Length: 399
Image (cartoon, rainbow, N blue to C red):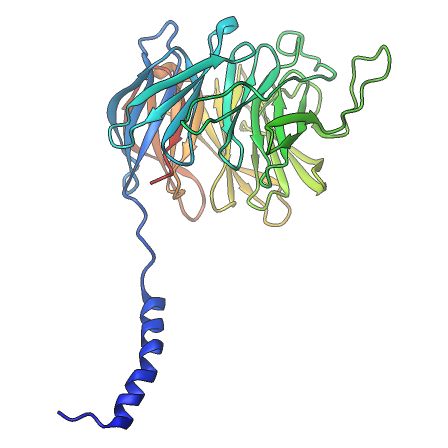
């Protein structure tokens, strides 16, 4: 069949338009159907051997065990490097506490120890990365200090670049707030500040972070007045006395900060007025009205869509579900869901926001809950993964 020059020219001119249209209609890559998951545990006085590996099914929320990833003492918090090549853990073993670096085999979930360094404090309970993935930051609970270690090109940890002890006025609870207790440390979105929740000081301290050197300095580095133990606290968020801040979550835009109070079982909402200056606008209980008895909160997390906030209760053994008021950032308690076990020290929301996995430390189980896409409420799927004394769960997001 003959094609005239005019028709041929039209076809040539139209080709780019057709290709663009086809490209525009192409579906985005499908999300992975499974993730590697690492679970940290307590090994003292339990049958646990260390860090455990699981395969996580994104469709069902089911965890399938892959066995012991690494035998290591009391890995109370585990973090997988953004590259997916390495994993890091704090070993909460009192005066001999350490921080460990591992090479990660993403297929088998096996961890190979690269090196292990002193934690520079007692009982580290949290570990995180700076936004470049070049440093790890740890919080040492008992000694009330924080430290920063560089990540070397081979994944090993180098000599620390920072080590600071939290200072300030102690809270009124003589049993829990007899000294500073750093419980959580994370970097701000722009990597300029490190936030530290200190249970003993009733503050979220804000340190300046040098992303090139890995150093930390107080937001106001001026020394305290002569004879005074209280520093200039202008660069921190202050909670009501006896709250005992443990962990922190942020809104999607970063303009609201949610501080979980372990001692008082509350969430305090702060609004960021300007330049990391936070003002408290609400304090709300994680417990339903009428609850009595012992309770210590443990974990807090914002749903990926920013509409719901979750917090775990130990004692009441439940997950509190909060609705976030759009624009205002304030909270409303909408549900209190039993975790099906005892002492949910930690929970994690899957990357797609479809499931919540609650780790019941004293029941040796991880229980999966489906998150209702309309209300944020939780329903148990029936999937229960056995693991001794689980206290932390991390997804490998690199693949």
